Length: 68
Image (cartoon, rainbow, N blue to C red):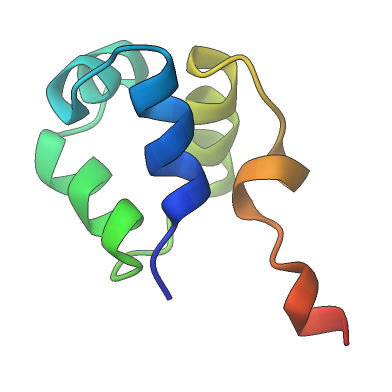
């Protein structure tokens, strides 16, 4: 499942995948894979992404449909 919330938050901050990757110490490819839903990031990377995008883990990474 694609992580559209992360992509939307990144675009809202006017960041490219490369910008976000640099801010969190990851590769652009890693950011791309996370947004595509093909990579599960470490908790540390999730936290760093949330900080860079001024949001929280629940907003970006919690899929509420999993609880229904």
